[in-house]
Amino acid sequence: MLNIVLFGPPGSGKGTQSEKVIEKYGLVHISTGDILREEVAAQTDLGKQAKEIMDKGELVSDKIVIGMIRKKLEENQGGSGFIFDGFPRTVNQARELRKALTDYDERVGVMISLEVPREELVKRLLMRGKESGRSDDNMETINKRIDVYNRQTIPVTYYYDKMHKHAAVEGTGSVDMIFERIVKVISMVKQ
Ligand code: ADP
Image (tube, rainbow, N blue to C red; front, side, top):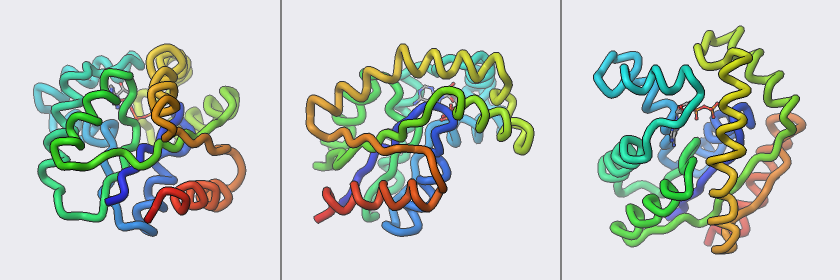
């Protein structure tokens, strides 16, 4: 199996690139942001709690997110692998992902981080806010999310660095150019 963590700040293009990776390698997409937005849309208790946190640009609790991941893993066994998008976002989540995959005798093959300058992230997210109406894509929440990323999520890169699984990819340029860089990294880990 091929398990990939696609990592990067908000607006770095994880969702866009995930779609292309899935198309090429037939992986199961697990986006914690998408799962949370489904809960919000369905107005579940979890969704109501999550919406408040997401609109503030803060992180939903590790416990909730890890529960969601474990459920997805259980429901989607037998495929050719997973791509994790927007997860793990804390070192604790990274450790819990490792434990959950170990239960299936699996592991993360590579963690690919998309690197994009802050000004570009803000520009892209403001544009997305206008087009898709995502309520967390406004100036105040965008700045908060990037700060939260720098403080709580960047340490995840050191976690994968230590295991020699972290590959940084330049996340600027055309969608296809960025995808080519990602494919190059994947070809080095795929047997
Ligand atoms: P972006 O990468 O643009 O911030 P996401 O869809 O990945 O978009 O996340 C949107 C929001 O959902 C986050 O700001 C956070 O509140 C919540 N969220 C998503 N994934 C996680 C996670 N793994 N841990 C905690 N909160 C999360």
